[in-house]
Image 1 (cartoon, rainbow over the protein chains, first blue to last red):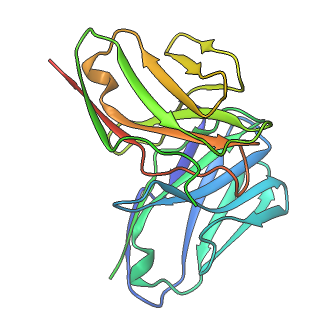
Image 2: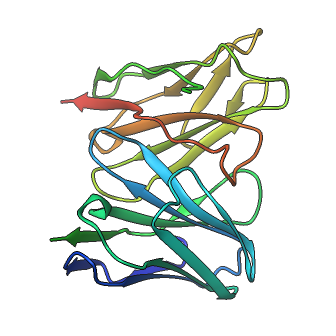
Length: 111
Length: 111
């Protein structure tokens, strides 16, 4: 497995609370991504980063923000969690065009 | 807007070749075909990609038709561990909003 870790791996939180998920890589790859996966859907891109402090929105960015202050860390924040954000969140990294390497995922439940 | 169409599910006997089709009739000249798979609840795994020539690596072969409107991923000797959801993706690049995972094909390898 590529050197990608996600924390926490599981989290239960209440509606309205802020939540931050962390993705950490040891590969020094330039690109980092956050996806969510829900039943009946494939993976949907939330945000991605193409360098330190360089980020852009994906397909389903509403309600999420990201930050990347170091090459190795990409944070996903839910400012005020809602039940619709209950999902499995995957982080991925890539250095170029072809292969994205995915982390183990974070299962988030918003009650 | 779905760029690719894949069957929802397929079965394959263990030891036989698994042929997974993908239609991408609106593919542009500069778009690649990528294949990923997701085993159970793990993060997706890159398999192979191609532009217009057939490609082979240690995992699989990718056959792209001459008009590039469809492709087939071939797992030459399927094993039980190949049971997974397989995603066909068409994109100019491997990052950003254009890289979209659809629902994929659920391949079941049967003993």
